[in-house]
Length: 190
Image (cartoon, rainbow, N blue to C red; front, top):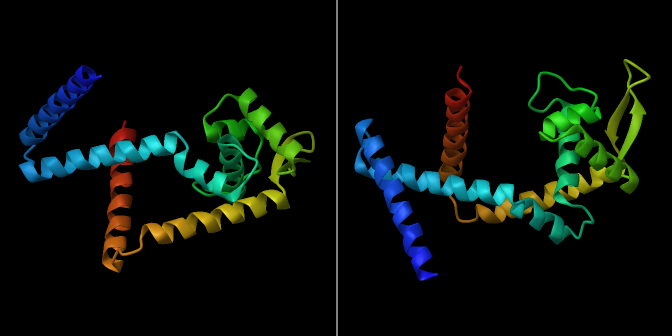
């Protein structure tokens, strides 16, 4: 075990040295290089917690909900799509669109939607533009659960930022959004 830890430490050291050399070539000062390495580590940890569902899973657990991560992801995706969050307009949600939004196979989206229907969180309705097409709509039960989750999440967020100054919160928000815009610009560039 100690030997594995030594190999991991060596790999991290080599990675940091390679990144430091690369960033130094780009003109970054040593203290900035260290800050960027710290940011990279923090973003990795944050991403790992999100991918493992630790934050959302904790909210579900603490609220005692009989739901899993895929249920909540699907309900929030339906909410976003129905209200046009992150899109040009609101839209009616089909299973295919749900699959696209969640980046999952349509058959998996169909199973999740069917389970949410059986649990009373989603209902199928005829599409307004084409009565032959079925769309997914959140029920009052889903809205209630999403409201509980919103309140609990923001209670946790208030606790998270306890002791932060207003300037620190404003700076984090501004800089994080700038960072996200930069990622989108650099990685989506063609």
